[in-house]
Length: 265
Image 1 (cartoon, rainbow, N blue to C red):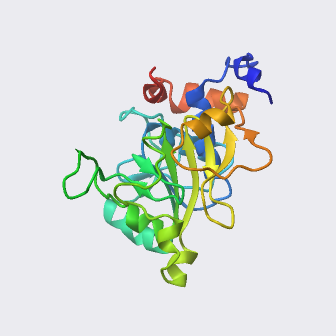
Image 2: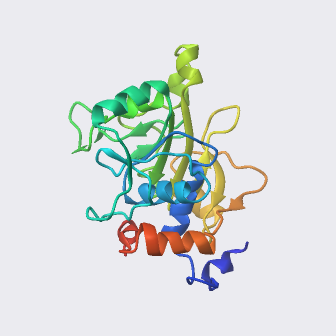
């Protein structure tokens, strides 16, 4: 599908927008996961996770972002939405599940490097940082036991950096020297940004371009990245949402349009 199709009218819901393309790209990170805890963090990742569960990964379970596993597809940002509760999962039970490895989390990254090291903690020297961020959060534990993907809405040389200032989530270079058990359970599956989709599926375990979003060129991605990306002979274009996916995003999962906030809308 060519870039001009981004502006083509869908038969059902109108043209796809960048926020919806990114939500679908995040949904695709869960493809093939099966019966796991789908644990996206943030508005756009939650939309992507709920979309995946509502379409091609119905066996995944998701919380209502509080303590219940909801059987129905919930709208984001609506605490009063009707919930069809199928189980109770308080926070302490999350940790039991984590040790089993049956979880796929999509987190943010203030910085990320070519090996997939992620920083959520601070900008600058950690002893006297220029900016204090969220902290390590659960990133170290996430990355030694189950699948992690990242969502970076502002792809630039400030976020895709040669070396992260603080390692919150370890990448492939840091895990390489650890035990075989840790290496076997460590997977940074994908990075989705507002410019494209990336993974580490090469012998060097370095970030490579999977696809660029419609209307974005490879040169733009390279220029906005602070390290050398692995680029194959051909680079795909990120797929557009189907009519059914657009309907789900706009009418069921995010009828308030909260996803647009990360895109200046």
